[in-house]
Each structure stands twice: as C-alpha cells, then as structure tokens.
Image (cartoon, rainbow, N blue to C red; front, side, top):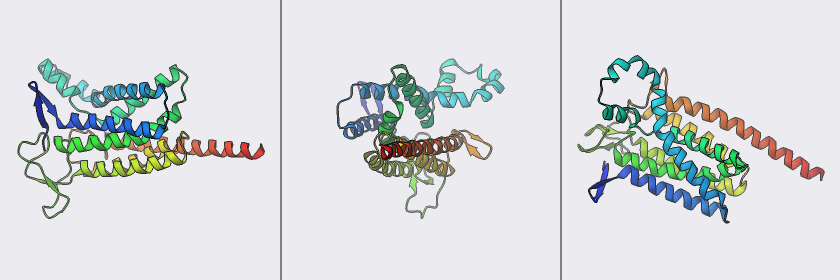
Length: 268
C-alpha cells in the first residue's frame, strides 16, 4: 500500500519498519503494566530478546534455502555480490525472530541463573501485541499478501500499482489484517491468563497453542510464493506443528507442577 511513508534527511522511512518500532514500544508498555514493579533484569532481557529476534528474523530463510544454494551454486556464484546478499538475507520471517529471541533469552537467563519461565510468561502477551502491529506494517508494505478473492467479497483489498511485492489491481484476502486482528484478540486473552496465573507459564503455553493454530490455518490463504513450500505445507506450517506440540507438552508440565504445589500446600 504505502511501503515508504516519508523521508528524513534523504533517508526513506518505511511503513513496515515504523510499525515494528511502534509494536516494540507498545510491547514494552504491556510488559511494564503487567509487571507492576521495578525489576532490573526485565529491561535487559527484553532488549536481548529484540536483538536475538532481529538476527533470527533474517537467518531462517537462508537456513531453509541451504539445499537450494547447494543445487544452484554454479548459477548463484555468477550473481553480483550485493544482489546475492539481498537475495539471501532480504526476507524477514517472523518464526525466525521468535526462535532467535527465545534462544537469546534462554542463553542469557541460563548464564545468570534467572528463571526463564516467569519471564517468558510475562513476554507472551507483549509478543502478540508487537506481532500484531508488525502485520499491519506488512499490509502497508505490500508483503505477506493473500490469495485472490472475489471482487464482491467485502473483506477483499486491492493494492495500488506502486505496491511492492503484492500484485496490483487484483482483489486479495487481507491475510495480514486478519492475522493482526487475531493477534490483538490473543493478546487480550493472554493478559487475562497472566493476571490469573502470573509466572506459571500458562500465558506462554496459550500463546504457543493458539498462535500455532492461527498461523497454520492462515498460511493456506497466503498467496506469496517466497515463503517456502515443502510437500503439503509451508515452512511456517511445519514450525507451527512443532510449536503446537511443544506448547502442549509444556502445558502438561505446568499443570503437573501446579498440582504438585497444591498437593504440597494441602499436606502442610
């Protein structure tokens, strides 16, 4: 829609980047409101998660393309270096950011003996909020667009000729906005869950369970071919399956741990 919002000192300010910044800022507000007290570790862990996420968001696609690079190396080596770098690292993948941020958080917390589960539980609603704003940025940037829709569909959107990435003049399913709406609703649910059981891991588990289902379903309505499809499913759908399984196992652990604590309290 509007990939470039305005220019400052001859530098283009992109809509996608702007909404990522807004999302991160709102996510921090959510963290502070949920925490309700001062904790010197939280701001640093939050920043480390963002740094790990920014690394992971650009690394997942190159990793998934390794077989392609091996098969087509003789062709790829003839491409100018700057063009090749943009081709390899030019696509941002949310799941890569999620994995990168999670690894960064785990490494930091393990290194300084900080409990991981309470912090991850706190960050879950904020992550959903930030991701929702990121998807709005995707819509304005013209990426992650949907499959063609009937012109009579009230939800259909048509990208203008200057849109980057998305086909122009074709009614499309606004997958980005649908996912954003789902993420904002999910964030509200996670805030409620966190307030009911803060630090237990419940909000984290619910995030993994619900978002994996949302993403798995919406992937069928994505029309962009660059996301990587292997067999029946896309890369993100395979990761969604893994996220659902891991979240389900973690939820079982959380409930088992909760029951053990309740039984101990009853014996006392």
